[in-house]
Amino acid sequence: MAKAQRPVPEGFRTLTLQLTVAGAAKYIDFLTRAFGAVEVGRAPGPDGRLIHALIRVGDAVLMLHDDFPEYCGGTPIAQGRWPLTLQLYVPDADAAFARAVDAGCQVLMPPSGQFWGDRYAQVKDPFGFTWAIATRMEDLTPEELRARQAAAFGG
Image (cartoon, rainbow, N blue to C red; front, side, top):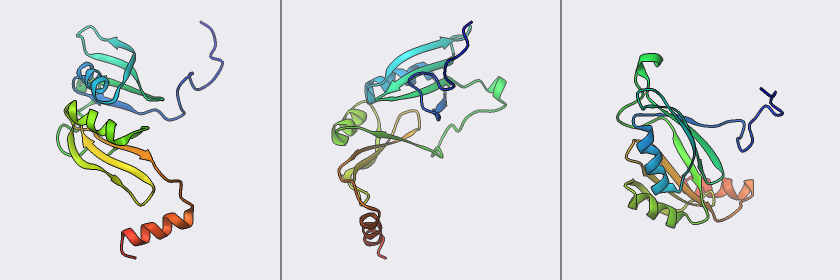
């Protein structure tokens, strides 16, 4: 076995999200339809559940695996609002939003211009995760951002 030449694998960032999903293989299929994900690889266990999978969404990698409560001591949040949002920057937020909705996402916030300079929307996927879909429309100075934020929040 060759010693690694770098501490972070090629194509990764120093922080990579890893999701526990009930039905990880189905989630990969959904992410392919909704967000154009590309499967890099998967490692199924003896019972067919995915021990590990790696996909690319745009230029980011996402790790995921099935739930293994027998090893992890419990189950992930099954219902309600997950305490995270997956932020996806794309060239056309409206087109990406439409694709996600067509694939089965629930609309939480339709695309609109935001004070911070993004065209921004939110959807909830059929597996319960919230996705923010955005396109940067304007690069603002810190002063412009503060002024717009004050105006947006009445202060």
